[in-house]
Image 1: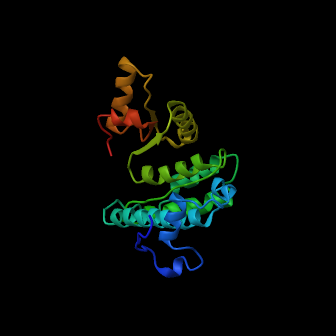
Image 2 (image 1 turned 90 degrees about the vertical axis):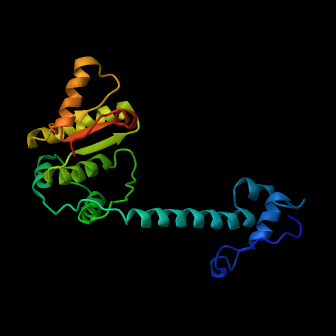
Length: 217
């Protein structure tokens, strides 16, 4: 790195109080003898902070590019029909939190647009993300569409299927569950329910969906 010039990729206003990219790379690759190793261990050294800016900017620009490309695709706009949503809320033994209500409103706004929704819902275990997913699902189901939900593990998929079935049973919404444990006629029957659209909500792992022949919608 000695004497090598590295072009700055970011506008100077973003790193006025930081060292240059060349300086940061030089220190990272050839740290001086008197460098504070504790700062390095904790990721607090100015050279590390300078490179963090580069990495975060690259990540954000990549996400913006993906979002921009996604907004060029077409999606089905779902009008704000609330009948099933209200039925689901009325049968719950609790009221959604303010955060849940806000996120559901944001999702419903996205679903009204003719472009794909790109949204990440974050929350601690038990914070109510499953209910948010259920309220989004009934919006699509009410418009006659089938909903597929993927879970990272088969155990979690089963738990979600049980929760959804409990919530949706009184509303006449059928829930399908794809499991690697299903064999023979039981599996064939479940696949038939899904393909015909009888199962309006389908829950399973990514592996199960990969092997699924078809959804109705």
